Image (cartoon, rainbow, N blue to C red):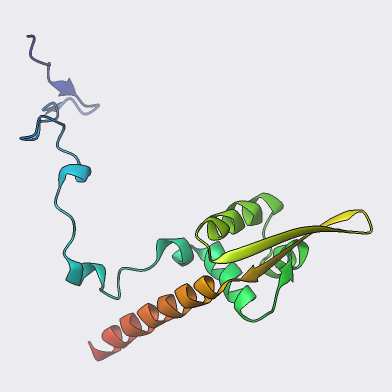
Length: 139
C-alpha cells in the first residue's frame, strides 16, 4: 500500500495528511465526544434557528401580531422576497411559524403566524439572552 505524500501549502510549508482515528475513520468532529450537558445548557448556547438576525426579526414581529401577510413582513423587515421566503421556511420547518396560503380576489396571499412552539422557543431564547447579559454585567 502506498503512503500518501505530504501536501504543500501556498507558503511552501508541508502539512501532514489527515490521521486515521482509532476506529479507522478520519479524525473528524463527528468522532469527538459530545459536549457536556452543563455546557449545552449554558446561556451562550443559543437556539441557532432563532438566533440568525432575519429569523429573529420574523419571530419578534409575529410575536406582536396575531398574523402578518408576506408583504407586510417584507416591508416591515425591509428584506427581499427570496430572503423572507428562505428564512420563513426554515422557521416553518422547525415548527415555530405556521404559513397559510390563500387567494383573495385571485391574488395569492400568504399569512404567517407564530405557533405555540415558536412562542416557547422565543421565550427560551430571550431568557438565554437575559442570563448572558446578567453574567456580563456581574463581571
